[in-house]
Image (tube, rainbow, N blue to C red):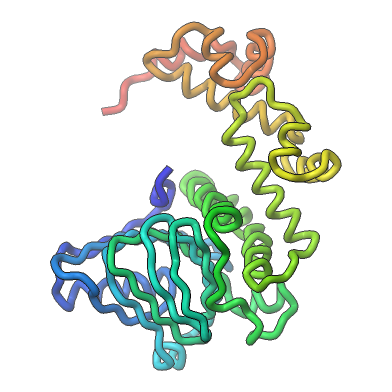
Length: 325
């Protein structure tokens, strides 16, 4: 999945290096993330795309843009209506940042925190893609129980790990937003636990229990989504891969409707549905194996409970549907 899949809105600049292009880009970034000034760092046409989704307290934006310099000055801060904490994950490319006394180089997979109450100097000399989560500054201060000047501004979490966990979580929130905006807003609110956990890790502090559980829960979900087609997947393997005890895994599974088993069955049935809807699906037995079911009998039972049809019936119905043009 690319960063932009699932996000409901997209805005693009024209392919031009005129001042109007950068003014327009400033407006887009200001509306989706925070108010800044922008200037080019590369010659030739300038092009950028930004997609955003607002979930109440939490807003998410994905950006893919050519090299430029971004500044948030004290002038921007003085006229700001609301201040925020931004958690930004680099998905591709890189940038150099000066913020809150820190000078850092961002690479793919790294995550940085910005406090929009402080100036920001950000520079990229080539195409960059990132995902940014915006949360009200006071909300983060209250949640962490710290002074505002102790926010982890300009601090970076290294490649992979927490940053990509957050990126994957909010991509899924954006996908849900397309079909059920209210549910997406609820899910995004729970993501504040993840943002808080990442913030304390960036500050070099051990996450609290609720934050650690939120991170572990997302790691379990990510592992299940990556490995559910393996019929030999066991509780012990999941716990070992996610570095949690069996007891903690079962505790995390309580957050999933129906528990861990129901989560796995749901993922497998959804994969089977897509295979049955495809033009080249092979036999029912092949679909069962490719979806992660240990046997055809288990597949039939789970599929019928979930859809009200046998796999064969579902395939026949799918074949009668008109092809979208």
